[in-house]
Structure formats: structure tokens, C-alpha cells
Image (cartoon, rainbow, N blue to C red; front, side):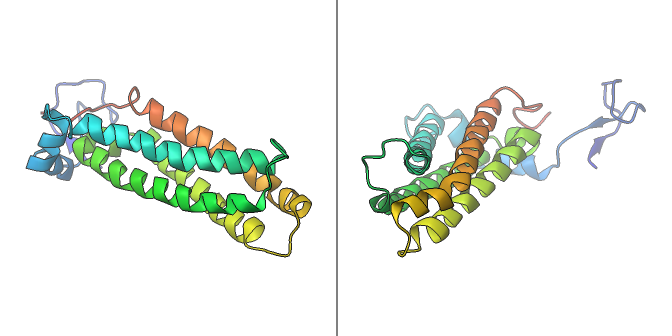
Length: 187
């Protein structure tokens, strides 16, 4: 537990005039030159550029995954299911972009992200969604003996979970802009 003794806030968690503050390592990250540049630079290659590429990665990852999930669930039956296996490469490229830009976004505002429970909800939903992607790859697209009907039957529950988890992860990501307690380390 991190407590700031003698804090001015009287409505503390402990009721003894003490307020919780984030761990000091977050301030160290925020005070680094790179974090400050990402957060405060007017360069087009700073924060908003990273955020833009985070959105591109999301479009590749979740867009390709949604196409696959919806096809497994019976949408656009005229499109053969087996060739959609190629979408896994696009999904992994999108995931790589999102992982890299996500780390940069955390470095820009570590206190905002790492003190917010919604951030951890988002990461949990993403981890579960990635696990579902690997199950789809292995159990549905990895078994060459399955015909299209069998692929759809085997993948239907996974596809529903995948869509649900990605909607949750995207929603949690959007909520991060509005649910933080600290934008930067408190002075």
C-alpha cells in the first residue's frame, strides 16, 4: 500500500487523514526524457502518431478476427472458410503493432494507465481474446480433415467468445480516457 502521510485530503481510504498515492517508480518513468517527449512534444511523430498506429493495429487485429468470426457464424456463406486461415498473419501483425504502440502509450502516461483498474480489465480481455484466436487457429483451421460444416460447428462457440471479448477490450480501451484517477503523478 502506498500512502502519502499528512495529505490534505480528509476523505481518505483509511479515514485517518491519509491519501493513497501511486508508487514512485511511475514518477521516474514520467520524468524520463522519452516519456516527456511522447506526452508533450508537438512533433507529429509523438503521442498522436503512436495513438494513430495503435488504431491501425486494432483495425488489422480485430477487423480480420471479426471477419473470420462472422464467417464461422454463418455470415457470407458464399466465401469459403478454409482460405480465411491467411487472416491469422494479418491478426498477428496487428497484434504486434498494438503491443508496441501500447507500450509507448503506457510510457507516455504510466500513472494514468497503471493505477486504473479498467486498464487491467482491458489487458485481461485482450489476453483471453488472443487465447481464443490460438484455439481457433489450432482447433478449427489447424485440422485439415474438417469440412466447412465441421469447421463452423467446431468454431461457433469460440467465434462468439472472440467477438464478445474484443467488444469488451475495445470498450475498456475507450473508457481509459475517462476513468483515470491520476493523469500524471501527483505533485
